[in-house]
Amino acid sequence: MGAAGFRATPSVLIVPLQNEFGWNRAVISVAVSINLVLFGLTGPFAAALMDRFGLRVVTVGALVTVATGALLTTVMDAPWQLYLLWGVVVGLGTGCMASVLAATVAGRWFVHRRGLVLGALTAAGATGQLIFLPWLGWLAQNPGWRLASIAVAAAALAVVPIVAIFLRNRPSDLGLRAYGATEADSAPATVGSPIMNAFRGLRLGVRSRDFWLLGGSFFICGASTNGLIGTHLIPASIDHGMTEVTAASLLAVIGVFDVLGTLASGYLTDRFDSRWLLFFYYGLRGLSLLLLPYVFGSPAFALILFIVFYGLDWVATVPPTVQIARRVFGAQNFAIVYGWIFAAHQIGAASIAFAAGAVRTVFGDYQIAFMSSGLLCLVAAGLVLRIAQGRTGTVAVVEPGVGAEAPAYS
Image 1 (cartoon, helix red, strand yellow):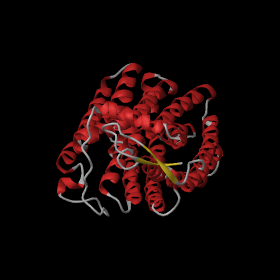
Image 2: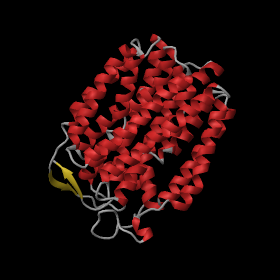
Image 3: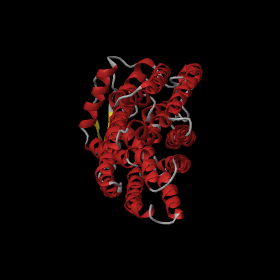
C-alpha cells in the first residue's frame, strides 16, 4: 500500500514543479521514468534479497530509503537532483516493496485461494493510491509540494516499527504451514549471491517463449497504467480546467474501483483460464483508451464512466500474470522470474511516461499518447492468447539459489 502511494506521488508534483522552477513536462517526466524503471528493475533483485535475508530486513531498508529520498527533495533546485532523488532513490526504495513482495507473500503463505489473496495484496496498492493522492494533491496545491514530500517521508518512517515487529518471512517462523498446504513449509535455504541468483532467474526466464509473451504484454500493461494514466491523467485533467485536488481525486476513484476489480480478478484467476482473463482485460482497456480523448470533451458523466471502468481493469492483470508465471517456472523460481516480468512492466511505464510528456510538450495535448496506448493494449490482448496452455515438459534448473525443477508450458 505504501509503495504504490509513494511511487504515485510524482504525478501530483508535476504541475507544482513546473510552476515553481519553470521545468517543462518532458524534463519532469524524465524523473518519473527513472522512478518507474527502477521500481521494476529492483524487483528481481529484491526477490533474491528476500530469499537470502528475509522480508523484514528488505522492507525496513526500503522504507528508510524512500523516506530519505523524499525528505531530500525539499532542498533540490536543479533537474539532476530531481532525477537522483525522486528517480533513483525513491525508485529503488519503492521497487523493493512492489508487486514482487505481494507475489512472494502469497506464494509462501497460501496454497488454496492464492489468486484471491494475491488480488487482495495487489489491491492494497490501490488503497495506498486512494489514501495518499487526494491528501498529497491538497498539500501540493495549498501549503506546497515540499510539505507533500515531507508527508511521504513521515508516512514511510511511521510504518518501519510495524514491519519490524510483525512481518514474518514464512509460516514456519510461527510454527504454522501455508494455508491449504498438506505439509509444513520446508523450502530449502537460498544459497549464493542474491545478485547472481537474480541473473540466474533471468537466464531461466529467457529460455521460455512464455516469458517473452508475458513480458511483452506486461510491458504494455505498465505503459497504459502507471506510465500513461498514473503519471499524466492529473496533468491532462488540469489541461481541461480541473483543479489539482479534483484531478488527484480522479486517480483516487480509480483506486477505489481498482480494489474491487483486483479482488474480483483474484477470485476469477482461481477458477478460469488466466490467458482469457488477460485477453479481455487488455482488449477492454485498449478500447477505453481509444475513447478517452473524446471523453474529455464530453459531459462529466462520460469521464466518470471511464474512471470507474479503468479502475476495475487497472491491476486486474496481476493475479493471472503471476498465476501463469508460477505454473511455468515453479514455486521455487517464480518470484525472481516474475520480478523480471514486472521489470518489463515498469520499463513500459517509464517509456510512456516520458513519451507522453514529450507529446504534450510538442503537440500541446495528450491525444496521440492516449490513442497509441489504446492500440498497444489491443496488441497485448493478442499476445496473451499465444501463451501455451498445457504442461508437457520441464525446464531443468540445477543452479544453486534459484530452485530445482520447474514445470513449463509447451
